[in-house]
Amino acid sequence: MFEYTVLAGIMYGLYFGLVGIGLNLIFGVMRMINLAHGDFIMLGAFLAYWLFHLFGINPLFVIAISCVVFLFLGIAFYYIFVPRLLKSKDPEMLSFILFFGLSQVIEAIIILSFGNNQRSIPSNTFGHSTFSIFGNRFPISWLIVTIVAIVVFIAVYWYFYHTKLGYATRAIMASRDESLVSGINVNRVSAFAFGIGLILASIAGIFSFFMMGAAYPSMGTNLTVISFAIIVLGSLGNPMGTIIGGLIYGLAIMFMQTYLSSWSNLLPYLLLIAVMLFKPEGLIGKTVRSA
Amino acid sequence: MSLNNLMLNVEGLIKEFGNFRALDGADISVKEGKILGLAGPNGSGKTTFINVVSGVYKPNGGKIFFNGKSIYKLEPHKIVHLGLNRTFQVPKPLSGLTVEQNVKVAAVYGSKEGNTKDKINSALSSVELDNVKHKEASSLTSAQQKLLGLARALATNPKMLLIDEIAAGLNQHELKRIADMLIKLNKFGITMIVVEHLMSFLDILTDDVVVMNAGVNLFRGSIKEASMNEKVVEVFLGR
Image (tube, rainbow over all chains, first blue to last red):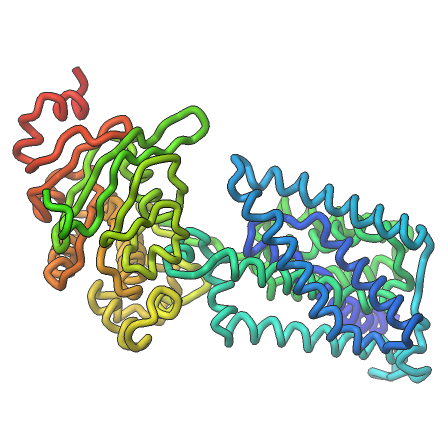
């Protein structure tokens, strides 16, 4: 049982890393918490649901479609709202209101359009087979989700450390002002990063059926809280740290569900409080010397 | 002053934060190849002036010409591409990146002219940071972080630099070293406005100083003349 819990926790953890990484990227670049993050995960799930049920498109192929749709959505959203927000007296505070409002609007539109029912994609979409690690058997869909998560993490790492745009993104995450006077078109890079953040959220949504059972319009709020706990655990503003946060969350939730299942819903809040009390900079956060 | 060799010409610059006017019609100009000292008490608008001219803050009124071209409300990265750059009073190096990578970002994005590697090496050697180029930027000392800010600006091939209180908090040895560097850079043709509290530091660099107070320029002349000017003395020492 212990071995099964650890292995399942690692797989869930990698998936939850995927759930949180987009939120951390957007926070890192814009210093704003996207309170509608969970709703974009939900939108990704609904996109996969409809494409699967209307056209029979496999969720793996929906990734490509969601890249285009959510990049466009992210860039459009950024240019419509963020530059105006940054001109305000208190952009951080107003961003909470803006993103909270956006979250409510997205949820309401989906409920009005499709109802508030749970939707799912059959768990055998990737086949009926199972796979075994150390004698423990898991559904094949978990392996596929784990592989997708790892590929996404490698892609994000490659973007940050091996592309010109990635360097610019890291520069903005470190200091918006220094980036402005380094000749970086901060708005353009931020808009692109916002788009990538939404793509990452949507990919987490596409695979939510296989890790969380079903998708429903009001799932966003809970997912935003979980994502927030994960990124605080890893390190706020450090997208790669989200993987560590996700793994700890995944392992913790698996252990809670196995040994203390009735308390498992409390986990994100307990983890948040624990991190705030003992390591507020996150588990891999570093203190920085300021001149 | 003849207008045709002015590198920077600012007229009636206004910047408001709510009901407070941080700049209330500042007129400041600098000739090509010169160093202008910008002094004044805390809150006189010196740093706001640099923030507005470099595009970090948007102005509420006035005119800003750089090399004869209006840069009023131009985006900061476009101002950098024209050849006007600045340093920050409190440097904010790009943490998570090495010293070399910090400068590389500026070399790549700040100017299309020249070879990136040459620009990085030249900027780092100009501020004598080549020996720490592989260190993480956030681990540098305060003085080194200020020099890194200067190197970052140099990597963008600037024609003019706005230097914001680079001497604050540095010891005498570091002050002399930075003053020598700025003089050398000026000899290579970089025009400068140097904002500074320390008159002794400005005295090494230039005999052309503007004293600001309450968002306007109060006086222009040498430091010696400034020290004898009644209004300047009043502003610095009080009545």
